[in-house]
Image 1 (cartoon, rainbow, N blue to C red):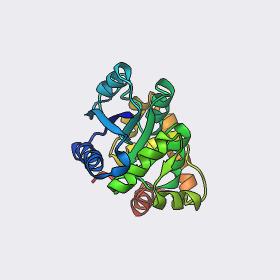
Image 2 (tube, helix red, strand yellow):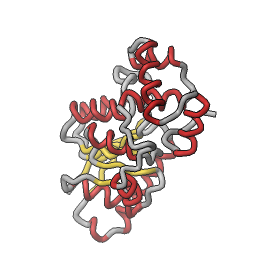
Image 3 (cartoon, rainbow, N blue to C red):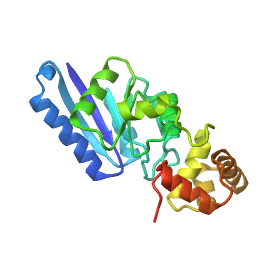
Image 4 (tube, one colour):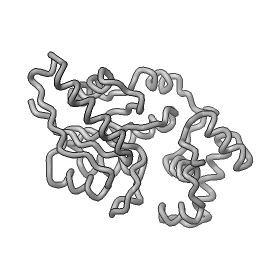
Length: 224
């Protein structure tokens, strides 16, 4: 059995790490005698990602949650990118690589069409389980992340929409509302409304409180 794998992440270290772990598994796992992993490429470009998916059959796509590049789908990121890829390439099983452990993000990513969700702390054993699970048509989430999901560990028990999550994530990257509006092709007023609704759900009233809460919960990476 041959399994075509594609790795897409903006961080070279992450891509090389996943590739090395796959090669290590292939060399030392007796259970894989009948499985051949063919890594057809790794990329930090959404343009190259779409090109590879369009011209080659990909069984499993390891996708970084925050791809950052210039392409026809560059305005799509996070859950929106997952949703687009799942719709355009339904035969490809998407396993998201993410630094985010918040249950809101995990749930929305799976609802968008991802078949797996793993953290950057994953090991060869977890990676092997993720691969075999999604190949069997099931959904894989790391145990620690699954515990959080089952506890519905949201900040104040209210679900954030995908738009609200994307606005918060880009704010944490240091982007202004004007820049976010351009990226999301929305008006400043609409983006501001998403931000204010998210703040209301999170129970904060100022930008300072928002950043402190997001930093404490590690929902997103905060740009410093």
